[in-house]
Amino acid sequence: MYQLTVPADRVNESLSKHILADGFDLTYDMEKSHGAYIYDSKYNRTLLDFFTCFASVPLGYNHPKMVNDESFKKNLLLAAMANPSNSDVYTQQYAQFLETFSRVGIPDYLPHAFFIAGGALAVENAIKVAMDWKVQKNFTKGYTEEKGFKVLHFERAFHGRSGYTLSLTNTLPDKTKWFAKFDWPRVSIPDVKFPLSDSNLDRAIQTEDDSIAQIKKAFDENKDDICAIIVEPIQSEGGDNHLREEFLIQLKTLADENDAFLIFDEVQTGVGLTGKFWCHQHFSEKARPDIVAFGKKMQVCGILVGNKVDQIETNVFKVPSRINSTWGGNLV
Image (cartoon, rainbow, N blue to C red; front, side, top):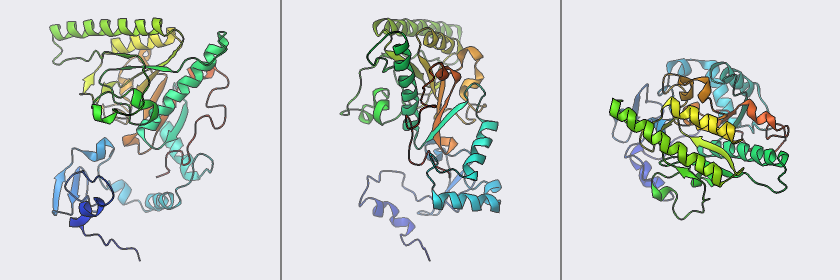
């Protein structure tokens, strides 16, 4: 019979033998934690949890509707033990999840879905969707060589730490330095200062004008070579930086005018954190994204993509193996 043999007060010591165990000085007890409280079995204490596993816990710990539902727990255990490769081996549980997600979280204007493990890889595949589309779009314009790989992004952005996302993230230098990166267009972020007084509103409008001018310049200097504008509706790691709807509408207009995708990175802001399932649903239709990247509180990561992608018949949702992964996220 399986038993835990590492004492709670030796967890960090044991982990430190093989990993950089620089996390919190506690041992998370998955059974005793409840609601908004995490139980620390190292010091036998209950803590109010503002960390929530890097903002990835949507319902608190051991929600009674999960803990007391024996059928749910049975299917969850099956999913955990089998860990099927959802990309190619389908289950009733997977189909039921997707039906539920469609009902509560997939807007009709973002019908295409792709799942993967990790928020950075969600963003990375959003970029791949845009690149694939843009290169083929350029072929229809007469280009004979591949063109359209650049991603316009913002200062103080955090989009992940892998592959393409390293070229976008620019918060703490330690997260990106000494890794190879692309020199893609980076523009200023016109974050709103609160309270929104007349002077702060004037400042916001001026900084928006400056940013839009930089974006227009980037499109002019990189003709047909920018496949996407990517932005967090609220920059989270970058400093809780909010953007006005008026600015996001301008981003959507510029993306459409320049045959580029508008990608909203909602890994942090999605799944009800702002009062709606997606942060962008607080804004009008004129600010709707072409792609939304999600993760964290969804418990699975991925992207939702709008109908713009269907302007190219051989897009990644029609051609096998263009984007894929072993587990297709995870069934748990």
